[in-house]
Every structure is written in structure tokens, then in C-alpha cells.
Length: 285
Image (cartoon, rainbow, N blue to C red; front, side, top):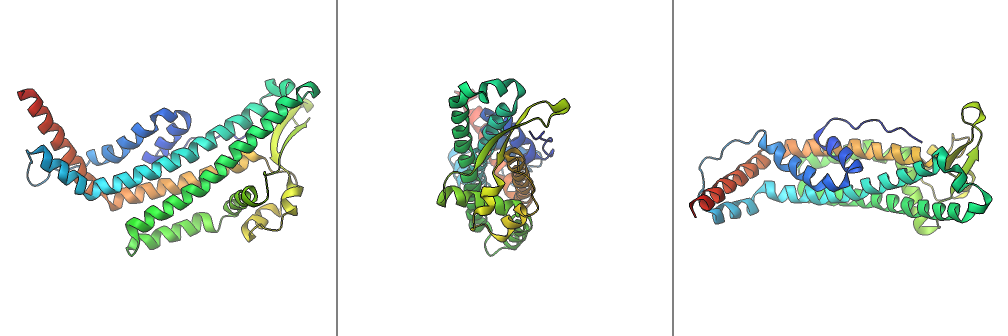
């Protein structure tokens, strides 16, 4: 089982680390990032407004509001991806826990093992599907906001660098295509005495022989599989790809905040004005 290193201490990295371990806080964290980030730098607008309806109108028509809603929609997609990753790795970890070996690998408990394998297949399907969904939703958002602008080329170059040239990304894409067009990915539960003092250990792996028998891998996936001499462990594949995704979206979040910093500052100021006006009216009633 892979021991996950702490996420980078960026705003987005920290939020996603918390989402993975405390999903219920995700929406709150994201809202704090979008509006709290601006609050640290928000200048006052040139003129204070006193009409709540006018402030609300300006909020609705502001660039900051429009962009923040799009980012929150993307966050929801990442939330799904992160949750699927978390559940899949938890299930693998449960199987690989030494205390569960008697429950899963004895003859009389074969139905339990079969149920576990089915659950891993379900969770892997969800992880692969959400990975593809996240890519598509990101592409739509970036095209909508930045097509024809300088950042669009920067995004495409970064995406090519991180994903298009990645052998691991090729494998993930191929596994999704396998799931869609061939059947369930060949996940195998193994038992060996490879532990300390020949202790029995269990692992969840992909069947390398079956993977190589398929002829629809792209060049990246073939390059990933070529040097392998044993069945690759599923948790290492999932964790490594999730790390790749997390680093990319940390970069994307940082760049979007840089590009729209003044718009977020304006939005935060309008929201502060609205709170002040509403509080004053409530106090006078």
C-alpha cells in the first residue's frame, strides 16, 4: 500500500487534501478560497453603494461572480474524482490489511473475496470515469474563459507537458477504454510470503499478461507496460495519477487567481458592502 505524502501547502492543494479526508467540508473550503483569497487583498471601490438591489445587480454582472461560479462547478467535478480516488484506495488498503487476510483468503470465505473483487471493479470504474470527466470539464471551462486569449496557449502547453506526454496518463486512458469497450479491467488479488520474515502479504494488482494481450493501447501506455516484470500494483497507479492531477490543478488554480485577481477583489468588496448595508438596515428596523 502506498503511503501518501502530504499535499503541497498551496491554497488549492490544502483544500483538496482536506476534501479527501473530510468530504463534508469541501464546499465550505472552496468558498473560502474563492472569496477569502480576494479578501486578503481587496481594495475599496471608488464609491460606496447604499442600495442593496444595485449592489446585487453589480455582483451578478461582475466578472468575479461569473468566474467564481465556473470554478466552483469545476471544483464539484474534482470533488467527485477525489472522492472516488479516496474510496478506491481505502478499499485496497482494507484488503491489504494483515488482520483481514483470514476473512478474505480462506476457502470458506470465497464469497467474501468475490464481493470484494466486485467492489474494487465498481470503484475502479468510477475512478476512471471521473478522471475522464474532469479532463473534459476542465477543457470546456478553459475554452469558455480563455479561448483567443494568451492564457489559452499557456494552458494547452502545460496540459501537453503534464498529461499528453505522460505514459501513466496513457495507461489511465487505456484502462478507461478497456472498461468501456472490452469489459472489466483484470484486477487480481494476490497472496505471497514476500513480507518480513516470509510473512504473508496480500496485494491488489493488474494482470500484466492480460494487459499486454490487448492491442488497443496507445504508444504511451505501451511504453508504461513494456519495462514491467511483474503485475503492477493498483494503488500505486491510482496514487501516482492522482498526484499528477493534483499538481496540475494546483497550478491552474494559481494561474486563474493571478489572471482574475482584480475581479475577485471587486467581487469581495461588493459582497462586503452588501453585508454592511444589510446589517445597517436590520439594525434600524
